[in-house]
Image 1 (tube, helix red, strand yellow):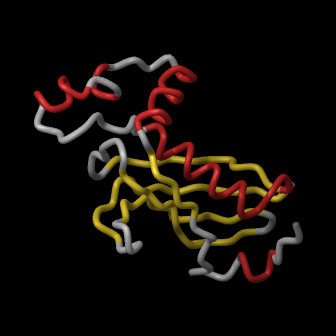
Image 2 (cartoon, rainbow, N blue to C red):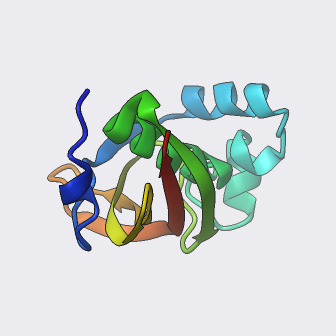
Length: 140
Protein backbone atom coordinates (compact mmCIF):
# COMPACT_ATOMS: atom_id res chain seq x y z
CA UNK A 1 0.00 0.00 0.00
CA UNK A 2 1.30 3.43 -0.89
CA UNK A 3 0.21 6.28 1.36
CA UNK A 4 0.13 9.87 0.10
CA UNK A 5 1.53 11.59 3.21
CA UNK A 6 0.92 15.03 1.68
CA UNK A 7 -2.84 14.52 1.39
CA UNK A 8 -3.06 12.79 4.79
CA UNK A 9 -1.55 15.87 6.39
CA UNK A 10 -4.32 18.10 5.09
CA UNK A 11 -6.75 18.85 7.90
CA UNK A 12 -10.11 17.21 7.32
CA UNK A 13 -8.86 14.34 5.16
CA UNK A 14 -11.43 11.58 5.73
CA UNK A 15 -10.26 8.11 6.70
CA UNK A 16 -11.88 5.08 5.05
CA UNK A 17 -14.71 3.89 7.29
CA UNK A 18 -14.79 0.44 8.89
CA UNK A 19 -18.28 -0.98 9.33
CA UNK A 20 -19.20 -4.10 11.26
CA UNK A 21 -22.25 -5.79 12.77
CA UNK A 22 -21.52 -6.80 16.37
CA UNK A 23 -23.50 -9.92 17.12
CA UNK A 24 -23.67 -11.94 20.32
CA UNK A 25 -21.11 -14.49 19.06
CA UNK A 26 -18.55 -11.74 18.42
CA UNK A 27 -19.21 -10.30 21.88
CA UNK A 28 -18.60 -13.67 23.55
CA UNK A 29 -15.40 -14.17 21.52
CA UNK A 30 -14.17 -10.72 22.59
CA UNK A 31 -15.03 -11.47 26.24
CA UNK A 32 -13.04 -14.69 26.03
CA UNK A 33 -10.05 -12.94 24.48
CA UNK A 34 -10.02 -10.17 27.11
CA UNK A 35 -11.24 -12.17 30.12
CA UNK A 36 -14.06 -9.65 30.63
CA UNK A 37 -17.02 -11.78 31.70
CA UNK A 38 -19.31 -9.09 33.11
CA UNK A 39 -22.88 -10.37 32.79
CA UNK A 40 -24.10 -7.25 31.01
CA UNK A 41 -22.11 -8.36 27.93
CA UNK A 42 -23.69 -11.80 27.52
CA UNK A 43 -26.68 -12.35 29.84
CA UNK A 44 -29.84 -11.24 28.02
CA UNK A 45 -32.10 -11.36 31.09
CA UNK A 46 -29.58 -9.46 33.22
CA UNK A 47 -29.26 -6.74 30.56
CA UNK A 48 -33.05 -6.50 30.31
CA UNK A 49 -33.34 -6.18 34.10
CA UNK A 50 -31.19 -3.05 33.76
CA UNK A 51 -33.44 -1.58 31.08
CA UNK A 52 -31.55 -2.58 27.94
CA UNK A 53 -33.10 -4.51 25.05
CA UNK A 54 -30.08 -6.84 24.73
CA UNK A 55 -26.57 -7.34 26.16
CA UNK A 56 -24.30 -4.31 25.91
CA UNK A 57 -21.21 -4.29 23.68
CA UNK A 58 -18.03 -4.02 25.75
CA UNK A 59 -16.86 -0.44 25.30
CA UNK A 60 -13.26 -1.52 24.71
CA UNK A 61 -14.44 -2.98 21.40
CA UNK A 62 -14.74 0.60 20.14
CA UNK A 63 -11.05 1.28 20.84
CA UNK A 64 -10.12 -1.92 19.02
CA UNK A 65 -12.24 -0.83 16.03
CA UNK A 66 -10.54 2.57 16.00
CA UNK A 67 -7.08 0.99 15.96
CA UNK A 68 -8.12 -1.51 13.28
CA UNK A 69 -9.60 1.28 11.15
CA UNK A 70 -6.31 3.22 11.28
CA UNK A 71 -4.19 0.15 10.52
CA UNK A 72 -6.46 -0.87 7.62
CA UNK A 73 -6.10 2.63 6.17
CA UNK A 74 -2.37 3.14 6.62
CA UNK A 75 -0.95 -0.36 6.80
CA UNK A 76 2.23 -1.55 8.48
CA UNK A 77 4.24 1.60 7.75
CA UNK A 78 2.69 3.43 10.72
CA UNK A 79 2.35 3.02 14.47
CA UNK A 80 -0.59 4.20 16.47
CA UNK A 81 1.36 6.11 19.12
CA UNK A 82 -1.60 7.27 21.16
CA UNK A 83 -5.29 6.39 21.19
CA UNK A 84 -7.88 7.66 23.62
CA UNK A 85 -11.65 7.57 23.50
CA UNK A 86 -14.74 8.07 25.60
CA UNK A 87 -18.09 6.41 25.53
CA UNK A 88 -21.18 8.37 24.51
CA UNK A 89 -24.05 5.85 24.20
CA UNK A 90 -24.40 2.15 25.07
CA UNK A 91 -24.64 -0.18 22.07
CA UNK A 92 -26.56 -3.45 22.21
CA UNK A 93 -25.79 -6.81 20.60
CA UNK A 94 -26.84 -6.98 16.97
CA UNK A 95 -26.08 -3.34 16.20
CA UNK A 96 -24.12 -2.26 13.17
CA UNK A 97 -21.35 0.20 13.96
CA UNK A 98 -19.11 2.28 11.74
CA UNK A 99 -15.75 3.76 12.69
CA UNK A 100 -15.01 6.96 10.79
CA UNK A 101 -12.99 10.11 11.17
CA UNK A 102 -10.65 12.65 9.67
CA UNK A 103 -7.19 14.09 10.13
CA UNK A 104 -7.04 17.05 12.49
CA UNK A 105 -3.38 18.09 12.66
CA UNK A 106 -0.09 17.18 11.02
CA UNK A 107 3.52 17.49 12.09
CA UNK A 108 6.74 16.15 10.62
CA UNK A 109 6.28 12.39 10.35
CA UNK A 110 3.10 12.18 12.42
CA UNK A 111 -0.49 13.35 12.43
CA UNK A 112 -3.58 13.38 14.61
CA UNK A 113 -6.94 11.89 13.74
CA UNK A 114 -10.36 12.56 15.23
CA UNK A 115 -12.38 9.34 15.37
CA UNK A 116 -15.91 8.29 16.18
CA UNK A 117 -17.85 5.05 16.30
CA UNK A 118 -21.47 5.48 15.31
CA UNK A 119 -24.37 3.06 15.08
CA UNK A 120 -26.12 2.90 11.73
CA UNK A 121 -29.48 1.60 10.53
CA UNK A 122 -30.04 -0.77 7.59
CA UNK A 123 -29.73 2.12 5.13
CA UNK A 124 -26.42 3.28 6.62
CA UNK A 125 -27.88 6.35 8.36
CA UNK A 126 -26.26 7.30 11.66
CA UNK A 127 -28.58 6.67 14.60
CA UNK A 128 -26.28 7.35 17.58
CA UNK A 129 -22.68 8.13 18.44
CA UNK A 130 -21.25 5.32 20.56
CA UNK A 131 -17.75 6.70 21.17
CA UNK A 132 -15.46 9.55 20.17
CA UNK A 133 -11.69 9.47 20.19
CA UNK A 134 -8.38 10.90 19.15
CA UNK A 135 -5.26 9.17 17.87
CA UNK A 136 -1.71 10.14 16.99
CA UNK A 137 -0.23 8.11 14.17
CA UNK A 138 3.52 8.03 13.47
CA UNK A 139 5.20 7.16 10.22
CA UNK A 140 7.84 4.44 10.65
